[in-house]
Length: 74
Image (cartoon, rainbow, N blue to C red):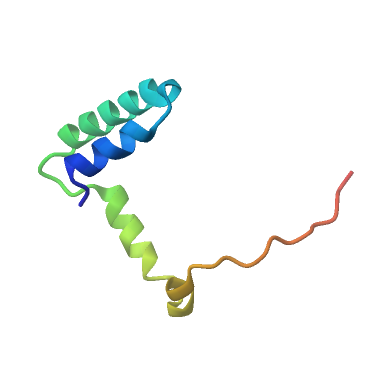
């Protein structure tokens, strides 16, 4: 869990041009939490369940394979 102080330090690092976006994002999250209060948030539950599908070697290194070059269909 992130503390208020940690969150404040991160927000303080943001350029002023992003502050409005962060404010709107946080308001939306708060509104969503109030709506889902008393029930489990299904999005996080699904995300956690999907983590179990990754192989242990991927979870240890969390490296993705290199990007493949694909032929053009032009």
